[in-house]
Image (tube, rainbow, N blue to C red; front, side, top):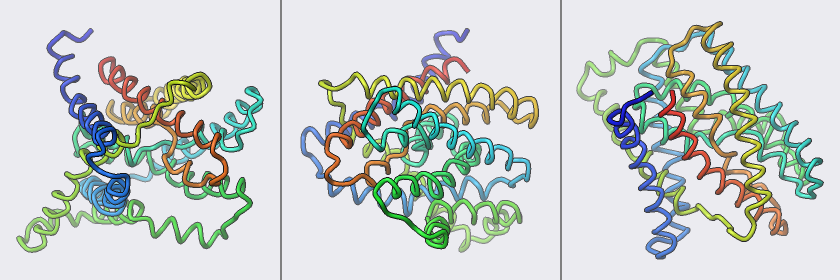
Length: 316
């Protein structure tokens, strides 16, 4: 058991994240900033600050071929969860066509990295990013295609691959892996002018956590009149993924790959996260009730994820 001092230290690391999320919610309720401002901030996160953070994380480490096992296992879990979501939809006798998508994928970009970095630092962030690669690939190639199919739309494989490769997050990860694998980081740091580029990326990456937290808080909408099914959906998702995370953690990460303890925490962190925030974007405008359910479930899941993450780091 942890003593009181250790518990206070751990809570103090997560508390700034929670306070920033609360601040974002205050901004919305007080109308201090507009939704259009939040949309612009999200563009900065997705296209600039988060890619900078990911590049620096991967540039400082070397990629190992065995990490492909983690990629494959996470990709398959996302597929399994989408199937289980379809079964759950039938169990609830729901007419919400988008409900199965709530079971698959994780919002690592707009939430996971903030939580993990706040406690374990940017030096360990590549471990979460490695685990995230499998689900990012699944979301681009499978989940988005699934959502488009629901709406009667489709994309060619060339369009999907191009969209994947043009993503700033993917470009940052791939270029970071290349720099880290070739050992180029030390050479870049050795010269003042080239090192200034790295320092710029570090400054940009520092924006990620506070801006993401404010955005999450601003867009946190929980409908107290309709908590039943959204709460049930979020709880079932969390319980299923915790069980799967335990199996992967104990069998793959510890017994087969013999990775350090932080990899296990990174895995649990991602599997506790809410579904991807992009799901509502792919919903048709006339799906008002279904969209309200999706947004309510994601908002409830955000609160559950924060609470579960705090318990996780206290226990592990």
